Image (cartoon, rainbow, N blue to C red; front, side):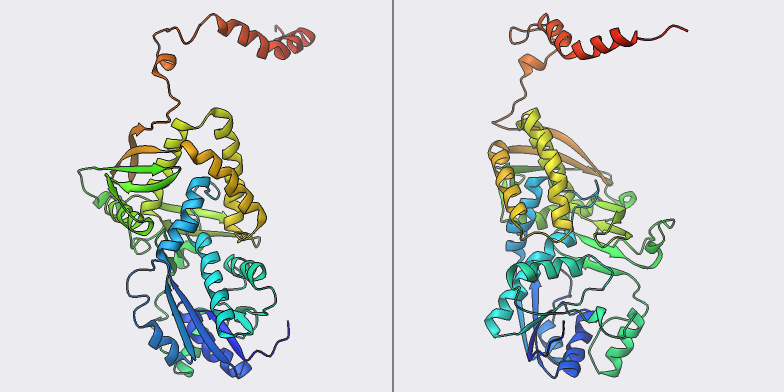
Length: 406
């Protein structure tokens, strides 16, 4: 799309790519650049001095918002309730953050009179889809500028050279070979030896969780309480969404849990390999599944499993702001009305074991499930049950002659 914007809202992280985008936009369009950044729990010193860095790079304005509570409460928790896991392993840490960051970017763009939106996503990844589908849902009238699909920069080395040539302050060096994304829910790693799935991850990949071999010899027991599918307390201490996740992250990281090495199918058509650390999320997802196993009837549980796959695809593919996702949330909310109770987990050297399950809405009946026959269940009824469901099998066997004798 040809455009001649005068004021552009940039999704800004302070990293290498978005730092060099600011002078590139100014040179190409002779425009103002409004940098928009969201604190969703990046941690470390990633946001330290980010306002000065953006202005030193050429931004006319910089907006930084603390969105940690909103991120966990309004995005991560709905995903947990839905049971969304992509391709059996990925807990969607990067995917679920993008709609919120893009939404904040659109809000600032509209508030400050910007006439275009810009992101620093590469032309080969999923994030470009996630950002731009959010733009289409919330500000379809604003044109989108995607430098990685336009400029002559083709590598990290090229980007560093551009930064030096334009006096852009950066921390990146050509020796920093991993691409990482961090928030309160997870930390992802891509690049270097990970690009070849035949290679095992080096020790340098993992920087959040302790090596399971070095984790404490004494296990840690943790009790997570849920109300209608939402985590509300840890070991009896009621916490805000962000604080609860942060506490479980600390416990999980110390015990080396939540590591995933995954080859995944990107929405844009290619396979990619990444390593993920989700120390708190791994505990929460397991505990939630165990509580559902106790409180949901079979038909609802099995149907919800099918929709969880669809929900995971929607999140992964950036289709958060869609009628289908809202409709699935309505279904999920109904299923979670009785998903209340406590699950106790044991964390030990990279493993998570379930120690206890409790719920006032438990459908588990000891009288029925016990091997001791009770009045609630009549074993003789099983004969008729088996005869009815086995009737089609029996008829077919009669026609075909059953197992043929040799």
